[in-house]
Length: 463
Image 1 (cartoon, rainbow, N blue to C red):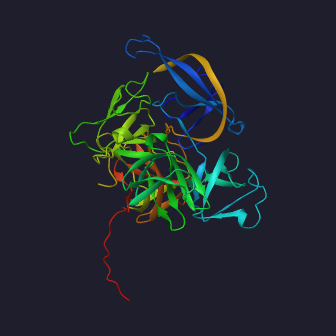
Image 2 (image 1 turned 45 degrees about the horizontal axis):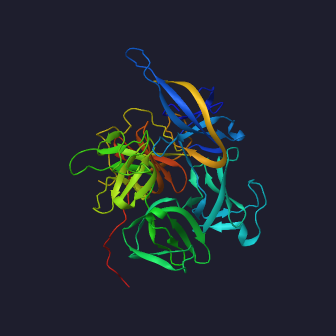
Image 3 (image 1 turned 30 degrees about the horizontal axis):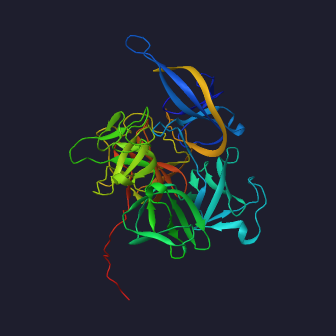
């Protein structure tokens, strides 16, 4: 890829012919096969025109479904710290966000609806999805197969709307005063231990238990193993809260030093997974106030540290759970009040803002809360894998992305996810009602969040 969009090539090798089509940020694709290749870059010095020593890197390549016109794209650089170009839309537990969702007997949208109550899932209902499939010719939809049988529409890419939202895998923090960890998936199984509020854990799988009315999360062995309740539908109580992925803003450190991203280009030293904050590797500073895009989080229990893997590659500290130091915080989701005169809502995630005065620049960020040529390519291994994915490269130019409406000042909106587009230097947000807006640009935020936390009533109670 050229760093701005995801290229489509005719074959798995980087020397194969380029397709005319390029995939901008937020494009949904269906991957039919995955292959790891070794790619060699021959860098040319721009001043002398001399070739430098070629570098080698592993690339994970994916073959597109025929409905997307065939071709291959780069999904990520191999290893645990490489750059990400597309992320997997994972199966697992989901909660319905639309007022109601139809359940059909097969993948086809025109297939027969299941009879009776089985044919409709209502807002707030939790479900398990075991497979996902992208339908580009049917409104750019992503369809999910239910564990209980039948298919539903999970994502409406044409209108930028989520009909069901996943309980994601990653780092969670306890919010209840006391949270029980059990041995088995059922809540009634023997308890292992209890955790007080504010403890972090790594959840690697989610399952909905209809007998208990709970969404349950499986903890990684590194954080002790076991199962925990994420959401209890019997009283709508939230036991643990997900540390979101997407746009984060770097905080100023007490020493004034920038936050460093640690890269792992070679073998791991000092830690087998290379994610430890104490591990070595090349360093890249990020100044305070800058925005980053986090695509994965991990909790290092022995260091009491939550770390995030960046879209551009590498890992950085996000939260020290022992001292309470916050190195970077996510751009808030939730309810906002718009403050700009008017805000355009588009159906696509990519920004229509070209580089220029509308961009966030280093040192001017605003907080809402205060040359290489491809050479030889060698196939190493191949495996069969299917799944829906969403591209994460940001767009290189201003292009129409389907404006659907304009929001006047003081409109109330709900933001469900935020992403930082580095090329356009802005933060884009998905609305619960469908569509995307530019939430943060060079002039600041275009909407003010209604923050969670303690409130005091101001209107006297009257019987």
